[in-house]
Length: 201
Image 1 (spheres, rainbow, N blue to C red):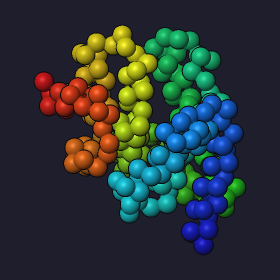
Image 2 (cartoon, rainbow, N blue to C red; image 1 turned 90 degrees about the horizontal axis):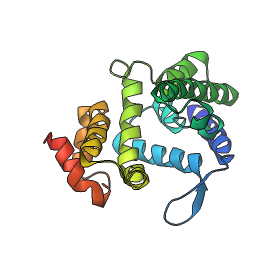
Image 3 (cartoon, helix red, strand yellow; image 1 turned 135 degrees about the horizontal axis):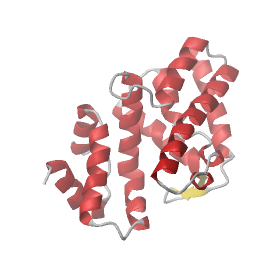
Image 4 (cartoon, rainbow, N blue to C red; image 1 turned 120 degrees about the horizontal axis):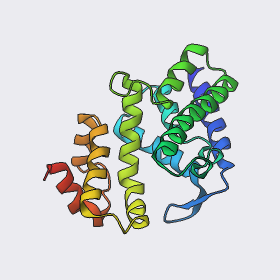
């Protein structure tokens, strides 16, 4: 029963993300952007925490669900606008995931647990939220950090070290160790900066 529910929820999440009008390339083919992101998140949790239960695996896949429906430029382009956008986005993702999980047939208790993680509540106190954060950061480092760097050639080395450290500090010691042990592909051009940031130089 639980496997059938899980597969139904994944199908609903994938269908929702397949509507993304923005495309991304994985090196071989084009994908709807958030569908590819969801697959990468699912792949990473299977590598990093293969024994995680269904609630966390679904929270991880719902991390960016239908993100294009809440564009950044709909908010003021300052720090206050960014924080409001991000806060609203967490709620939007949690509510969207909750509705789809209800459609799949999950009970309220399960849905609330997923929503709490997706909404990033209790980062250091809720193990589900921390695991979702770990997977998010590992996926960012492996798949998105280099593209982000290429978009911001104006950033100084100090700024980059600060960004890497902030990402690193959000991760649990287990996720940090997982990354350092060679379990993820580090973006080659950024390796010296990553090493410098992590070493605390």
